[in-house]
Length: 264
Image (cartoon, rainbow, N blue to C red):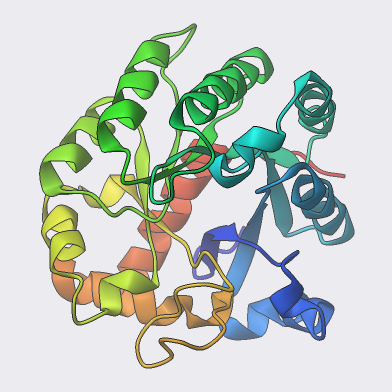
């Protein structure tokens, strides 16, 4: 894998926002400086589609999992299908899974149950995890701690990090990496900037969460991986290193978390 190309660790190219130009965008990734893309499942349907995209493109890999937003749709049959999907060599993580207490539903206890069950799936398949956590820091940390030390040091990404510098230290201590995207370029990103100050570069991952959260000056537009150089540039400014160093280090980080990479 080319060292000067960005490793995009969190995209949703299965989203309907890309219905008209999905394949054109994916086929043009190298022209925007993107070498590898992880497409992340959020439901059983998008997990299937993520794997389909990964099987179509050699540089695309998939994560399969059910987002906490859909926890009330989870059942044993869906969990069994996720386990089957996870046996494919192009599936390199379980995710995105976790907790989201921003809205009253699904019930937090239901979210916690299926978060744990999908963490157990990651243990069985010996795969890293992609964690979604919003307004649920304490419960997320408690569940991650439950799994800390199971068979091996758990690897994974705390996606779209939104908590404090102190919580970032806890996440790093447990062995996780932290996904940084377009939010770092926003004028109101003070808390994330403070967190990045304590996050060592060897724990930073580049991500978009596209089609959401496009960086400045594209805030409010549809996001895509081609905007990641703007994120790398901002991280470089904050860390006092070059953009090329950010791209190289974050690629090495992503390969360490989600590799070794198989094939079709």
